[in-house]
Image 1 (tube, chains in turn blue, red):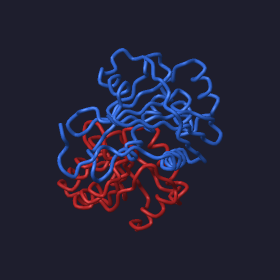
Image 2 (tube, helix red, strand yellow):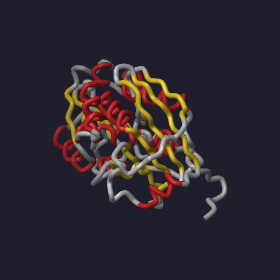
Image 3 (cartoon, rainbow over the protein chains, first blue to last red):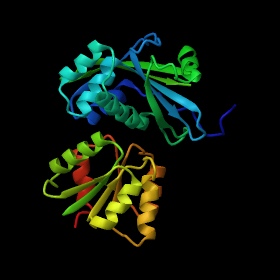
Amino acid sequence: MRPPTGVTAPPVPIQEAVGDFVSALVGRGAAAGKVTPTDIEPDGSHVIGIYRDTHGAIAAISLADLDFAAGTGAALGMIPSAAAHEAVAAGELPETLLENYQEVANIMTSLLNSQNSPHLVLDEVRPSSDPDLPAEVWEAIASPSKRREFAVTIDGYGNGRIGVIIR
Amino acid sequence: MKKILLVDDSKTIRMLIKRNLRQAGFETAEIIEAGDGAAGLVAAKAEAPDLILSDWNMPEMSGMQFLQALRAEGIDTTFGFITSESMPTYKEQAMAAGASFLLAKPFNADSFAEALGAVAP
């Protein structure tokens, strides 16, 4: 379906915006660089954020590896970085870090909204191993309209990757 | 600014806002917390805060519904949104409904000091 005249697709953030966003969010130095997107598998190695437009359709997806989700979740809540490293080693985020990362993903909507694009809100975040992830998520990952991924370094919390897919 | 009602469904964000309020010079203010607009409405009536800071997107009752309910009940407490909804249309809606400011997430102590400095008595 063609969008109404004047309405564009959600913006795909650039690396400077992602670095500034993470730095402002966690109150620490952060830098982001564009990287080649990684394969996403239903193995729990990523946390998937689902963004819907005002009609309820999935319009964008964020793909955080465990390092990014744990690191930003810990930094946001001023939780020692050791907790993030332990979560990554365990292959799963504990509830506190997942809740904090959900806020990161929620505030990330500010990077995905613009005056001329459909208004998006975060619907939910789920591990990539969740069998109840909507099929559209995997369809979008397999054939994205636009996709960009960033390697992000946060002072004191190490490195991680965050990707964005526009359907 | 003696008493501030802070309404956000995220405990983490409430914690961050409290930290930034302290860093922005509001360390002596009493902070009351609520997890959504409905709980915020109850707290606003019971506690008569000097300032209300509220998220926009929340379960049960959104920040906008909360503000509208306050004004409908004649409660004219200074109200500011703290939200990831940073588009100008949201700011226009907020101001039209009676909010004094809209502070976009992510925020820092400087943005708090600027926003609250303009409305603090």
